[in-house]
Figure 1 (cartoon, rainbow, N blue to C red):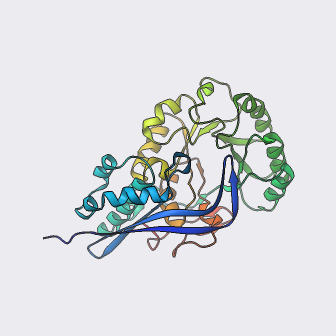
Figure 2 (figure 1 turned 90 degrees about the vertical axis):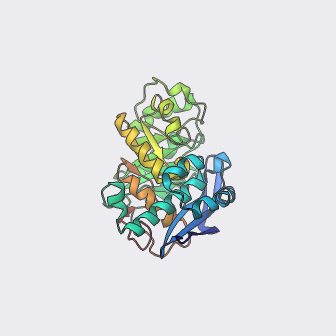
Figure 3 (figure 1 turned 30 degrees about the vertical axis):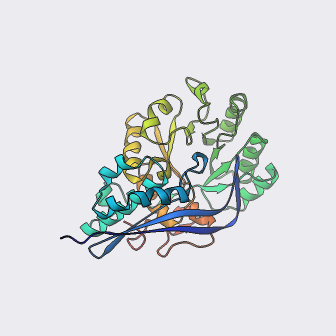
Length: 329
């Protein structure tokens, strides 16, 4: 009889350097679930944080994964997993662990297995919602040498904040993310001003479920869906309203669905962005893979943490080098 797989689950807590504020939420640490699947002398690993605004926590993911441990021990594969668990953190952690396991058992790299390039990426360096536009401008100035800045916004003086960043960093590429924090009239006021500041896109300006006004709305700056497009099941509606879709593996439920969603986006003639729900380098590695298909990568999650995994990704002023198999894949 073939040896049964061994499954190990851990809930982990990774403190951040400092609190990080966005619209409606403050992050002080990463809480995640880590899955290890051992088979024939190798171990596949996956990590997920879940989707906080859906109540999809690491603790909830832990319980969902525990419920399918018997199926995993009997050899559950990624195809069957897509039907067994819904999109979310639990499926993400297991899916990524299975990708890692498949690579190690076959001796094939993730780049060959996923059919993507293996090149360094420029990632966003994110500036949270700070006390004032002046603080925001100073934070941007402190990031000298970083080529791509992502500015978190809410309804408090968004135009002034963007102007402050552009004044401090005339050389940088800028994207902004409102995390559902604007109204339609405020967005319409912001767009021409953001265009003057050469903002490349605005991410999720309106609330999930409250963005129908974007359909056929003229825009001087491309608009990107984040909360409004979790997976392929929501893509058709999002494609009518947005120019760019932000893929996050905690939303899609893993790399398998993320790659399929990226292909669907590109086939529609839209652009791909890849982001994260905060994570260590173990979570960023599969996101790095799908980022090879993206116009914009936002993979700076580990930079906000006090510590990272062994074999961590290497960041140099926002440029991320390809990872090694010591980390994943």
